[in-house]
Image 1 (cartoon, one colour):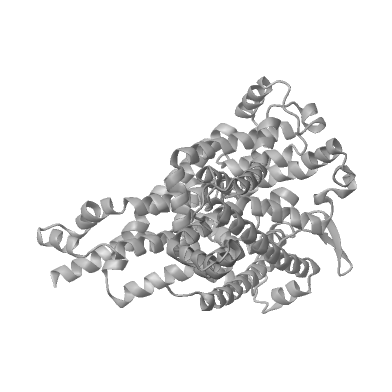
Image 2 (cartoon, chains in turn brown, blue):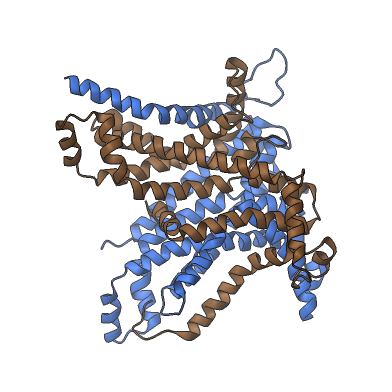
Length: 285
Length: 305
């Protein structure tokens, strides 16, 4: 409700109060990351008596053999980055040929992809595991507990929505651009990489953000495909192993959570505008 | 002619990687999954005996299992409550941050941030808040109801379910708010000006202009919150792990085990993959039917501009 009056201060105060409630959990994580085991159970709300404990705790998590923060962080980055590159690259070119080909096959393929968006992960997850295991038995290609398997899974589950979004965007690009290039002797793949790809930048950003937040935070798919106690672990897997094993070591759990959140929040502060735009565009489609 | 063949070649060349991935992780497992749900598929196959066809046995057994029926009921309850709370909070926040208040962009970002934190991690944060921070706050303020260990939100199953709603709302409301913000900002300012000149107050304008104009956004937000609530798993795992236990149909069972977790536990904890798979099929069918009904009902109420 935009009114024509000046700033509404009472409403501003109310919003600020709600904002404080929303930020409160972050505050709790921060102050309790700087406490020892005793202080955290005794005074969970008090400000830490000695902030330097924060660095001790961070150092503990950083080097802890139980959480494997460093290797989990690297694995998470590899999995997220590689999946995003593959999803964006493959979905964009697939969407382009689906838009530009007016055949019946093209329409049916697109329809099947779109329909697949409603399939929940739960219905495919158990057979997926036995199918991947079967492939390993027959061909020796290891898809479980490996990077290849999880990348394939993210491409498979992420492509439907991504193709849908690229499809909507490419439809609005005038065909004349491509025809001109074609007459000038440009090959079809050349048209895509030289003419279309540069135009797709904004929609690439949207798709990146949408899939990036999903993959970075995902828990169930890595849990099933990478498994527990694997060399390759993502941050959510590492946190759940650690929090499960150290049920009451809240000081270290809080520090681990803080260290899991900080990279995401830094990323948000840098790319705030495109993240919010991307997330909203993704929902409205 | 040459160009047409070239066309077809590039068509399949560009499509083949995604079709390969799609077949590998969606189509084949989906078909296998439907088939397995009618068999005695298990993780430890007996020697010699392959997978045997058992008809609807897994489905019949699921519907006779108190844990599954209970999960169904509380998932329905959780979905309804969570949809209502998330959308009311999100819409209210959207109204606030589109009003003339100082620092509204800052507030928008702040309400949105929890959405970037994964459900698993935020479940642990809220577990600490409910089990340590709130009782401590109660002790500091002298509020017995908060500090008494018997009153812990996570100690009883229905309050614990509402704890999941609180954590779920914290995560999701900011995201849904952004969709409402986009819708509210799309309402032409002239409509508000004209109504104001005609003497309509803020409340009247909310119900006569903002809400109807945002009807398209409601289709989306209700769909998203419906699917998101129905599939809740991560927060469930880290916040309550399904506990505390409760009695249902004369059996002691997990008190906050939502459907997604029940499916997982049936397959891996009870070691009955076929049973878990049958439940996953039921889960899919129910979700698809409800979502279709919801979108259809909402679409009817949308107004065309």
